[in-house]
Length: 138
Image 1 (cartoon, rainbow, N blue to C red):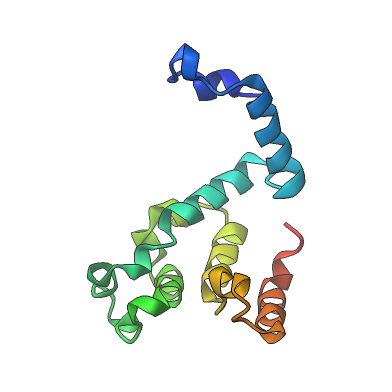
Image 2: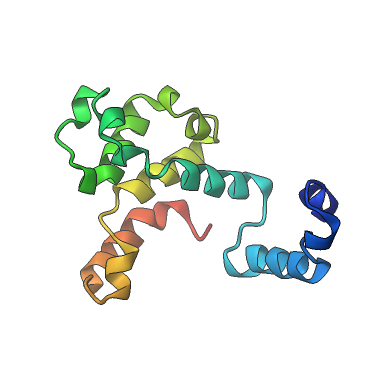
């Protein structure tokens, strides 16, 4: 339990309550199953870099991804991570299994917002399931 470390920079009257801390810990462990610091680190690293491919200036530095438009930013970033992982140190420093999982997540043609609007088909979900199956339940 590292609540004290988490709140040390917060003003006393604005700090995260013990109840909220407990709820977050329970959610992380039971709902999203982020049970180790490595999985939390990988998830946060992925969230930090996932939009890099949207930036044209970033994509322009890599000849192999010139064909990708902004709408295909995930595929561009996945290819960059495969070919030149050192340019994204936040991901490159992760264990191989997490780097592979991030690349596969980026490579799947699935938009969650489209799913919520009913714009994706069952085939899209099957494709996601098959692509991510080698990574196990984690």
